[in-house]
Amino acid sequence: MQKRNQRRNSANREIRYLTSPKIGRNSNKYCRFKKYRIKYIDYKDPEFLKRFLNAQGKILPRRLTGNSLKFQRRVAQAVKRARHLALLPYVTDNLK
Image (cartoon, rainbow, N blue to C red):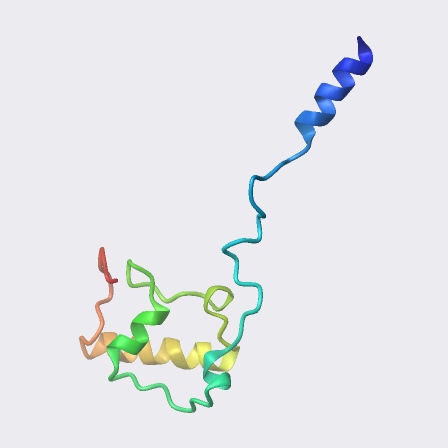
């Protein structure tokens, strides 16, 4: 009786996935600005800047975009400038 309960408990403790949990996760992040040698981020190009915004218009963090710290700051500054000139909205429901 005890062995049967131990088997049930050990089976409940194991986490089993039908697919690998790493699917859909991009493991090799890279800074696209360094890769393509982009030195200047144009704040007057809202279509390019939309890649770094989510559906609500918030700036995506580095851990999601893969940008380096230097270029993440430049992207944030460019987005803020574009918002100030009304090229990008501050807040929205469905940006993409």
